Length: 231
Image 1 (cartoon, helix red, strand yellow):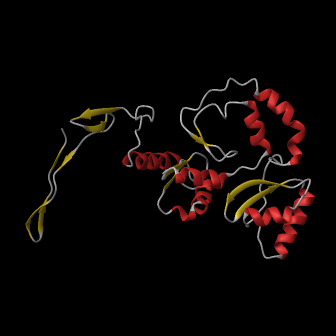
Image 2: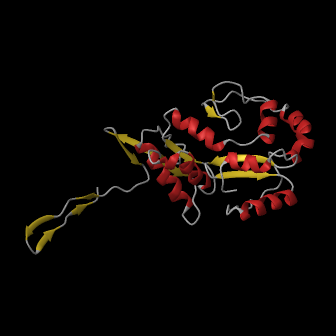
Image 3: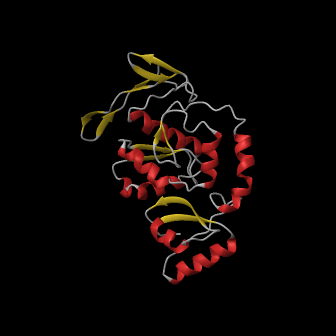
């Protein structure tokens, strides 16, 4: 629903079947629940001039419809060997930066399956911490567009895709990798598939054939000499 959370929550009232599933931005709120109840809600919004868009999903996550499976889900999650995150994570449940084992429990992921995904608030928390470089890992940069709107346009941020529809995958990855590098991110080039050598502090690809090209020297207004050599 292309409306803010408060307006959507007011429309839901005390509905026993519909729930806010995600808070993606100031005018993007996802509602989850039975299809018939959802259609009634969307017709009500349409009568007020508020647009909506249906999402293709396998289940009505973050709604009461998944509650029957939560006990079994938590039991299975409890068998996972959880590890402490190596980097802080802006949790979509608590909207805080987690540094320890808060996420490494089956109970947390039970909550994550049922409670709303607070994407916009989590991104705002990262922005408040001074983060300005965002890389989306996924087939299309859908969250990038949401992220820009979630933090007032995100004009002071750099937004990078890992993949992008209609563009060559390898070129998209390399372009974003280069953007990360020039912004000070340390890159493990060998893990990225490059074989490099260091010559006087400058890195060269071992697979490249090097050619020296001298810049043109203008001798006469109509005459230019271009020399090249290959070692």
